[in-house]
Image 1: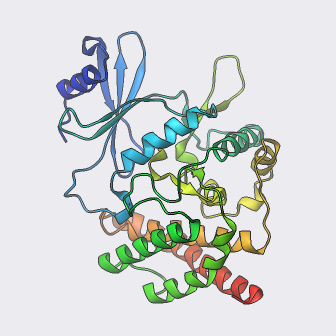
Image 2: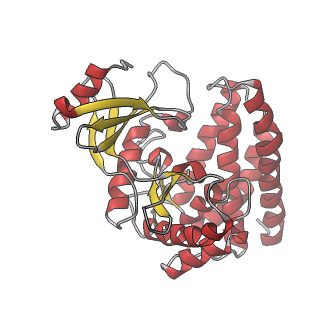
Length: 330
């Protein structure tokens, strides 16, 4: 990409904004795939500019055309008044694919959130996520079409998603706690539970703390400022969002979140088929996290963390699928 002041000015101009009002271009940290910058205008307005890596940069199969999915997420979130960026422009008129969006107030959720603040914030988050899940799509899968057209049913879409990440793991020689063949066999035992999902709902699928902004308005209580980085979104099972919302943990223990989710009409039951599906989605996310370390060439410290923290969670998810499949006779 061309990272320059003039390029940022051109993006503003192509979006119908006055490039002469550009006051600052500042790189934003936290992203692990795209390049992200904040554009500050002279009147204090802030925009966020996101650019994907060059097409020659290696990645996973589902990571093609991520900005298409991200723009889709923000447009959909706006229809139910969920705190999220608004799309200003998406395209490649500058010669570089990009997404220009409004900036949300706040900073990523971190250790500065006190124990007293946590419960009301998680409850508010639950209400917002429940509203997200009321938005439905035209089919199942990634709107980017990175893995092909949207599917008419969830089992077809999710099977395609699983096959893609397993193919990536095989191609990259990813270090998995079980072989690709063993993982695939176990995952297939849980696929019948996917047939219970009949409505393609809006799923963010990357709602870990870093993608949840906490706004602290002067003189007011902290609130959810925005749900950002919607590039991993797909149309599917709302239950899938519970994985990143309790990353490496168990959403069933997050009582404030579940209370807010149910208050806003969200369905959060954990019968056997739901537990099978939740284990499938955990396995999918953890397969992605383990496999992506290869094309991203992570350092030794990150590799050690992934192997010590993520690999055991993948094993636990696969074990749960096996156990529940025996219970259901699948």
